[in-house]
Image (tube, rainbow, N blue to C red; front, side, top):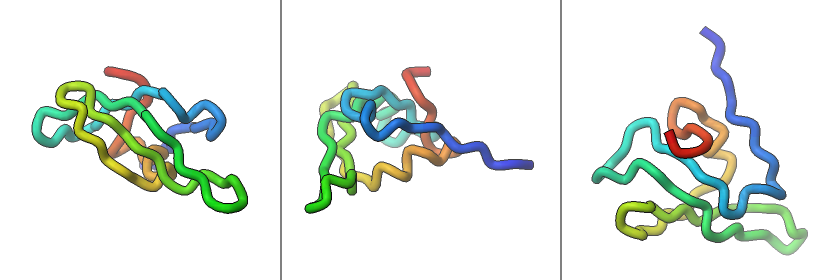
Length: 75
């Protein structure tokens, strides 16, 4: 079984929508509300906000490429 990765354009990361494959606390749909960059302007982390309760989660943006954890868009 090959592991497919979500294709992400870093320049379109802000305000992108994501669905958690295995929701925790009924938090299924998320939107990227902030993109953090390092001194060289390279994206380091992003802030996801749960749509249901506005809880924020900071993650390494590369984690969004794992299609066993995240799906693009709201499914």
